[in-house]
Image (cartoon, one colour):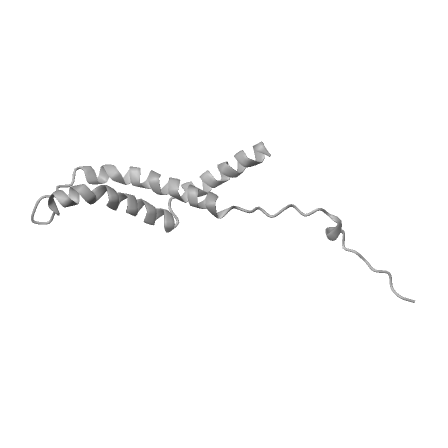
Length: 99
């Protein structure tokens, strides 16, 4: 005689679909965080002199905004301040409400 096949009750339960976060949503949240960080850094540089001997003159003043934006992007890429995670969670909630 053969033994009956025993099925685990876990196999009969419906599994929750895996939570998938699209890359585009993550990029958007990270870009938002980078923009936020850049805006927070901007006041730190407003009072700095760009005159000689250690400043870059008018060119430094011209390019400073781009430098600050890149600093914000780098901070966000390195893990940021946790804002991107909250933004992504909110975007997911909004999509679930629409579905």
